[in-house]
Image 1 (spheres, rainbow, N blue to C red):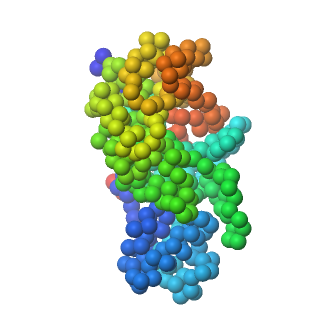
Image 2 (image 1 turned 90 degrees about the vertical axis):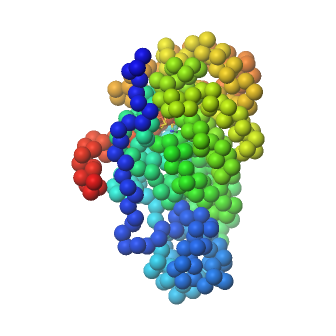
Image 3 (image 1 turned 30 degrees about the vertical axis):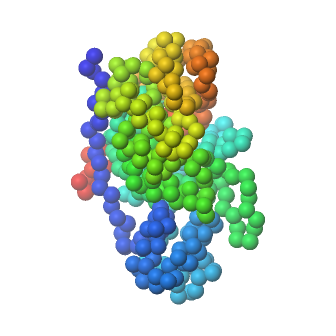
Length: 392
Ligand code: SAH
Ligand code: SF4
């Protein structure tokens, strides 16, 4: 069949606009970049390290947005900072809370574009699902985000900012002088929102450096999972430069089916992908890879598929995360029946792999996997309108 979707759709890619006024946003700069920026703006080199440490703590440990409140800096230095820098994160346009406690934030970034961020509370942890792009250039046929035509990479600040806005909403910043609260509300981050994180590698890497820094947000690299559709050339770099856990949107056991579900498979097929994945645990010093597998009725959910799957991944330390398909308006697939999902899980489990079935969360607010899409923006404007507003 040749009717499968192209790898990359005809998207409208917007140039990133610098913020007006020329102030540099501190949020999203790695320690090295912030140090350089402080010096370039006039901080004496000898003081830079100390100032950097102080600012870092205010911004990422206490969640301050205002230089005036940074009481361990001189008044003059606070004024200097305010003149050259800003501490800005994306704005929350709306917040929906699901019956199951899941929170979905519609977030507005520079240029008026919107992405979604989802907070999923569980018994022993709280996972924040963040976006790395507005829309996605890839066209996985079961994914709502892939139908969105407007695409722009998020800046590192916009990626880190999603963690910060969730902490704002959850009231999770410690107060100066108060003891550190050990139980974290945002304890894990997954790059599983809108976009393909490995098509925005540098910004994702810088953002994760900030999030993983051992002062401030301090999430360990084992609490961060990056999900990719299989951008092979960037996978080894992810191991070496980020070192977080990796999830792969696998979804099929033959190239014929995967070409249709995840069209980027035409560029890097199953064999090429698996060869690269074999090296990931060693390169990143992590235990295992998560294989995500969306359960689509009659498409990829047979016993034969389950058996092929465990054969394919033999030798790779792995966990298989089965995701019941989440429907969205106009979706061309149906969710596999529950008994089918369980039978599939059983085969995988008996072959020696953990095979959790991902319980859909926040379905009532369209916050589940693959349902994200800034519907508000799409409903309001056509691509043409957006283009003309962006001055294209
Ligand atoms: N672009 C990245 C990360 C975002 S998607 C990637 O593709 O890996 C997070 C996961 O949700 C991916 O495994 C994706 O394939 C899956 N997904 C997408 N649409 C879905 C849907 N409608 N139902 C269930 N899972 C879906
Ligand atoms: Fe993009 Fe991931 Fe959706 Fe595919 S599944 S279209 S890579 S967001």
